[in-house]
Image (spheres, rainbow, N blue to C red):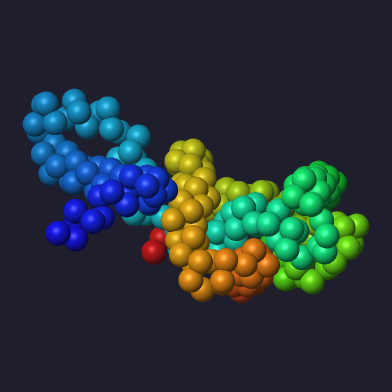
Length: 261
C-alpha cells in the first residue's frame, strides 16, 4: 500500500527518482562484479566481464583506496554540498537581503559576484604553486576553506551591492585552492599506473555530494530553514567551516607511499 502512494511521488520528484535509479544501478553492478569474480573460468561470464573491466578496476581501486582519499572524501562531501547550495541560492539570497532590489537586479548582481570570484581565482591560481610550496598544501587548503566559510557567513548581512563583491575575494581564493590543491595532493600518494582511475574517483567525490544535496536539501530548507535563502547561505558557510576542520586531517603519508585503509 505504501509503495502505491510512493510511486506517483517518484515521478513528480525527478531528483529523487534519479538517485533511486543510481542506487539500483550500483547494487546491480555490485552483484554483477561478485558474479564475475566468483566465476573466472566461465567463458560467457568472462567475456561479459571484459566489457565491464573499467568498472571492476574502479571497484578494486576504491577497495584499496588510501586513507588520505577517504579523508578527502569527507572534506569533499561538505565542500561540494555547500558550493551547490551557494550556486542555487545566491540569487534568492540577494533578493531577500538587499532592500528594494528587483528580480532582474538580483540576477545581475549574482552574475557580477560570480564573475568577480572567478577573476580572483584566475589571479590566485598563478601564485598558488609557490604559496603551497612555502606554507604547505594542507595549510593553504584549510585556510582557503575557512575563508570561503567566512565569505558565506557574512554575505547575508551586507546590504550594499558593491560591498557584496568583497567576500567574493575570499571565495575566489577558496575556489582556486579547491580546484588545484586536492588533485596535487592526491597525485603524490598514488602510483602512476592507477593515477587515471583514482583521479576519476576524485571526480566522483564531487558529483556524489551534489546529487545528495539535490535530494536532501529541499526538505532541509523547507522544514528546517523556513524556506529562507539567507539561512541556506549561512548553512553553506557552516558546512565550509566543517570541511576546513576535516581538512586538518589531510596529512600526506611519509615518503608519499600509498596508505590503505
